[in-house]
Amino acid sequence: MAFRSKTAAQDALKRAVAKAALEEIRPLLTPETVIGVGTGSTANMFIDELGTLAGTFKGAVASSEASAERLRGHGIDVFDLNSVGSMPVYVDGADEIDPGFAMIKGGGAALTREKIVAACAERFVCIADESKDVAVLGQFPLPVEVIPMARSYVARELVKMGADPIYRQGVITDNGNQILDLYDFPIEHPVEMESRINQLVGVVTNGLFAARGADVLLLGRKDGSVERREA
Ligand SMILES: O=C[C@H](O)[C@H](O)[C@H](O)COP(=O)(O)O
Image (tube, rainbow, N blue to C red):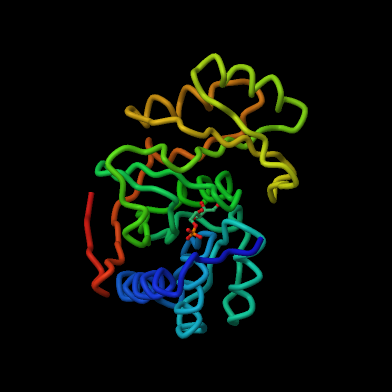
């Protein structure tokens, strides 16, 4: 998976929130601490910052093979989630976040592992540039990870729910599954919609992180500042 930002200016905002995230979690890091680490261009910048503290904490659980590789490249030990108990914090980006701290994630197809690792963390720190800050979720297409043989069935069911699912061709998730993206699908009630879509047979999970949203948002502003919001 290659993650790129559209502009150098956007990269600067992501770098600023990545640095802010490191300061946010620094007090939690002890030689016994394992933290959860997300996926994407913003998470990559966080991993690069985290690399400066490699050796001062135990390690990380990664939400994708790509992040695991990057963590190891910085000398950070990567643990299987099954060998780790609760983690104090999970740090990850988002494709959109609303005022209630519900998010759309999965633009990089890592949604399922992200949701699992986030579920095991006491706090979710979302790191994002201000373009991700929206009043209503759904401008960004909502990803739905499906078991390959169920793709057409799930797509038909999603159409009945008023969505316009598009198969993300050529993309296989780290779990060996496929992605349907729901375009032009404004989401007024994210908790209900997350649950409704997840109940379709063949859906592994969807990219709404609403029942378990973020706890802290670090938002990079165009003026170079980082705004901190807490749920
Ligand atoms: O599957 C990818 C993840 O959900 C990312 O956290 C999300 O797409 C945001 O990525 P980026 O930081 O590259 O905008």
